[in-house]
Length: 253
Image (cartoon, rainbow, N blue to C red; front, side, top):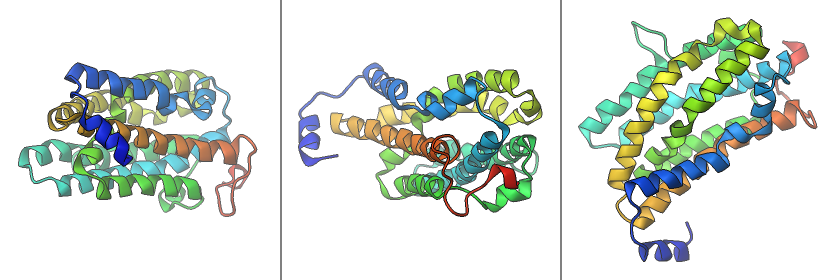
C-alpha cells in the first residue's frame, strides 16, 4: 500500500464490522475466480476431458500447498486459542489416521478425470505460472503481516456458493466425474466454518482504518493469485492453447 494511501486511511474512521463485511463481499463479487472464463466454460459444460485433466493436475499443486500455508500461519501465532482453531484446517486437508483429507479427495477427483494419482502427486507437467502463483501465496503468508496472512484466507467467504454451483454443473455436464466429487461435498461444510472464524478474527484485530484496508488488500491479492492460476490454464489449454515446454499434454497421458 502506497505511503499516501496509508496516511489517507489513518485519517478516516474505522469501518464498522458490517461495513467491513460489505467491503470484503464487494471484493468477492468483483474479483473472485467464479467470474473467470475458464470456470464459466466448466460450469457450462464446454471443457473437454483433457482440459479438465489439466485443471485437476494444476489445481492439485495448489491443494497440496494449503496445509503448508496453514502450518505457516499457525507457526506465526503466539495465541494458543488461535492455533487450536486454525490447525483444524491442516487436518481438513491432510487428513489424519482416522479420516481422509482434502488432498486425498482431490486425488480421487483427478483419477475420475482419467489421470493416475502418481502422475498428479509427482507434479510433472504443472504449468510454471501455476507454481509461481501458488508459491506467491506461501510468500504472502510467510512474509507479510500476520493480519494480511489471516485475511488472505477470506476467499472462503465466497467459496461455498461457487462449490455448490460447481458440484451441480459437474454432475450435469460431466457425469463420469460423479465418483470424484467428495472434495466439494466436504468443503460445503468446512469452508463456511473456517470463513466465520477468520472474519471474526480480522474484524476484531483490524482496529484502525489503515489495518482494515490492509486486510481488504490482502484479500484482493489472494483473488489475484487464484485468477492467475486460471489465466495460465486458459492460455495453455483453451486460447491460444500454447502449453509451455514440459507442460501436461492431454493427448500424452
